Length: 195
Image 1 (cartoon, rainbow, N blue to C red):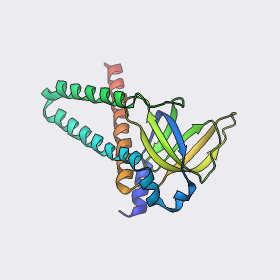
Image 2 (cartoon, rainbow, N blue to C red):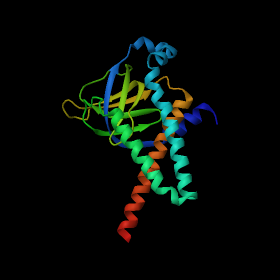
Image 3 (cartoon, rainbow, N blue to C red):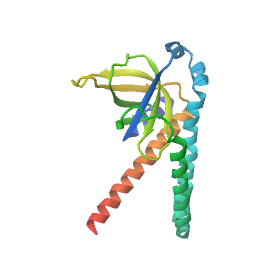
Image 4 (cartoon, helix red, strand yellow):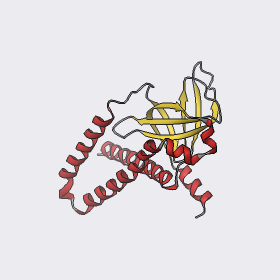
């Protein structure tokens, strides 16, 4: 599979979810120097590598539940503890923007913003999903700005910038995992309705 096909495959996986978003302007000169940009936001990008560990844990957990159903109470206890710790770690973070629907793929994000952002400008975006998921931070370039006809509201489309292949793959895996969770919840709700 060539690079363009990989990009298309990852862009295809999209997820709509609720999140708060915080943005920080980055020096536009960094657009010409992705290596310097990656060095500047190294700590933020480390969060994407944590996604790989989370996805690996989910795979091991699901495999263990299938092969050893008796482990279910222990695994639920571990999950509850991990969720509690995630809440403790991130509860002190500011939540300046209201939670809103966003649409994200492994290559970009679309969201509403109260003011105009210049197309081509570079920002560090912190995406904080509602619930227990840890926040994600990625540099992104504003690609499009749509005014939906409402005062002080703009629809922004941004493309993630200077992410490595492994980071983009981790994002795609994060999205696919959550898509599967949503489908599982919908199926459970339908089964409960039919019962």
